[in-house]
Amino acid sequence: MLTIVAAGPILLCVILMTVFGWPAKRAMPLSWLSAAIAAFALWKMDLQGIAARTLGGFLSASEILLIIFGAILLMNVLRMSGAMDSINRMFSHITRDARLQCVLIGFVFAGFIEGSAGFGTPAALAAPILISLGFPPLAAATVCLIYNSWPVEPGPVGVPLMTASATVKDAVVSAGADPDTFTRVLTKWVVIPHAIGGILIIFAGVLVLCKVFGKDRTFKDAFGALPFCLFTGAVVASIYLAMGILAGPELTSMVAFIGALPILVFAIRRGWFVPEKVWTFDGYVTAAEEGEQTAGDRRFVKGASETEENKDRKHPMHPLRAWMPYIVIGILLVLTRVDAFGIKGVLNSDPLILHIHSILGVSGADWDFKVLYNPGILPFIPVALVSAAFYGMKKEETARALRNTAGQISGAAVALLFGVAMVNLYRYTGTGAGDSMLYTLADAMASLFSGAYFIAAPLIGVLGAFMSGSNTVSNTLFAPIQYETARILHTSPVLITALQCMGGAIGNMICVHNIVAVCATTGTNGQEGRLIRTNIFPCLLYAMTVALVVGLFLAAGIDPMPELLG
Image (cartoon, rainbow, N blue to C red; front, top):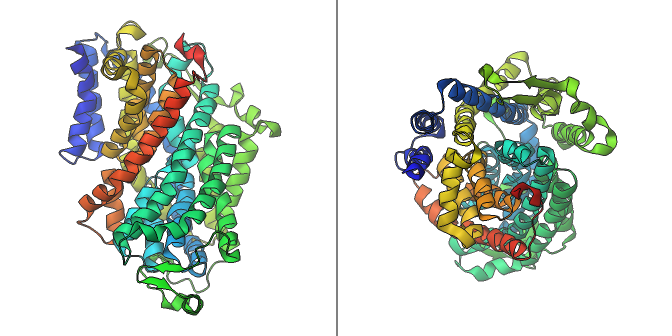
């Protein structure tokens, strides 16, 4: 009986979003309310405790929201100033081969956008560029969704992974471990299996492109691009693994993909790993025909190389000027995240940490906020505002960018606030960890899946992303449950939580919210069902790949933090 009640708020959230089509911003508050009622009626949590833990959840969620706000604000400044148009134009003369365009723009460039901003922006920016290069709109939508998976974890400024870490922070502390260490270790054990599956998914995207949208509808056309796909995977994975293992989650996705971009462009121009025949949606073309291709021959869609806000700007922006904010952000993140520079220790020192103890008088309900260590406060929001001046934006334009950003994150804010608050209620119901709502649900899941749990774990993450449209929300809902289930099964909490993170990233390629957004962007409304059917196989392929890799780690007895098992 208690298990059914404990599962009720999450099941309610799933049903409201998937069956009734409610957005997360409507479903999550109602799910929180049902959790609060259950906590009060059956777990005997008093109203003061419910209020304190809810407020503590709001405060924790606000840290993530500051990062989201800063990342989206910078993206809006780039778009409104014309900088993003300059970045888009860079891709128009590199190659005519649609397979290479698919990888370079749909995967690498969109991966950088995901790593720097995320939250719906990658497909909205990359898909129109592909359409302008001659891609059928549905093809552009499909490949952008397939590729919106690897870079989602650790994701935009590390938000999805840090959210997962934040939701289990108290459990980590109660086990006597350091939460910052847990975050670093979790990052390492996410990036290793995720990169292995990611390399496979690069070629999977090209296979889908050729089989579903090519003139001859055959997988055979994809194999000419296999060397370039493997080379791309090797380049991205090398940077991705180095960053994830050595630098932590904030920089990993952004640096891996932007670092790979010039290397891959150079390789294409030198003819390295490039197919002998140029493949287009009309079939193969000769070298002579390839040389005759000009920018004027390409189809154009509004938004691919000129936005409404800056269509009256007469002179294109120099690419270096357009990229400058990201260069500055990369430098600042390196300076503030790498121990060798000494700034990290200062930003994490006690005078710069905001402490709130015993929220509403409830003992143990505490919140610590490292103010200047938050990537939203430093560097994203300041760099975005300075960039607006740097690009000569008027005050009213900057104000509009701020308003647009606030409007864009309002739905995510409501969902995240109540999602983290609900997780707090799950964790702190009952008189101890052994009888909380969270433990009750985790114990049931452990009994259900037992020794095969490493297979189920990423699929739970996929489900969370599918129903919420967000890896961050998926991690908010399910990371604490997956962590606790791992403890009950006496298996590695780090590796199981890593599977949750990766599953949430992989689920982005089929989640309803992303599909609706990309269909609206590409003008393919009404094709949502076809997109899900097309992308379900790459999604399951990726999920099973990371599950098997982690399964091998578990079979080898690897547990990165055995102290978490007590």
